[in-house]
Length: 257
Image (cartoon, rainbow, N blue to C red; front, side):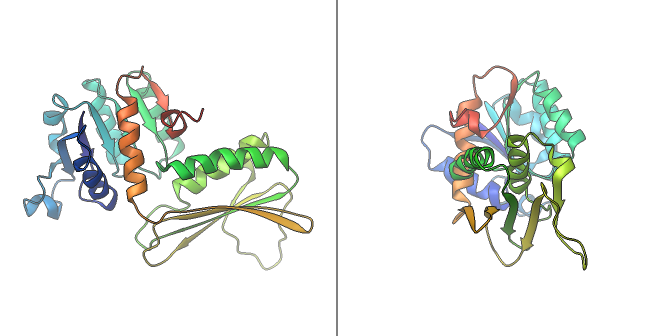
């Protein structure tokens, strides 16, 4: 299977390249970065400009994108022209941008997930089940990432909050509280709190707290290496090839739905 990686010089891009090179069933058709990136200027590990994406799509079975929301949408539009399946690991999309992804997915198969790891996607399922079992418990989500991460909360934390709210029959836009700063304001019943920490080189920790009278349940996922996300992205790429047009997530790719 031939893959093209957008965002190839980034942390995730490099991890995906390493996983792909170690897989005898995968060939890297293209490794792309934004024009002017040092990896291109240095003539690094065969990284080309993202402007050349179309040149690679005729020899590509699937595209994996870990860039930024604006770039990812442009790359997705380009892939659509060539009916190329697409895997999006990029986070930080607005609701309008998510709507655009959904519209494009009517034409090509797209796996769109804020987190590609097996463990986190199992966490999504666990949070849904626990929220349904104890709907009166307070729910708080805390996520930790490295100090270079730009978006907050993380896409994974936002998804966890959406899953919890949906399990309770709520819309996260109505019950979500992001960060807390108040000298005289108690927590409202039914809120779902989401708090972000940015420090050091933390790869990614996510904890969901269900707190009730006299007890609490803590569900936590800690990433020890980016390889787990890279392996998940490659697994999603293998799965999405041959699928019908539509918008899928990692739960589909992992057969957890």
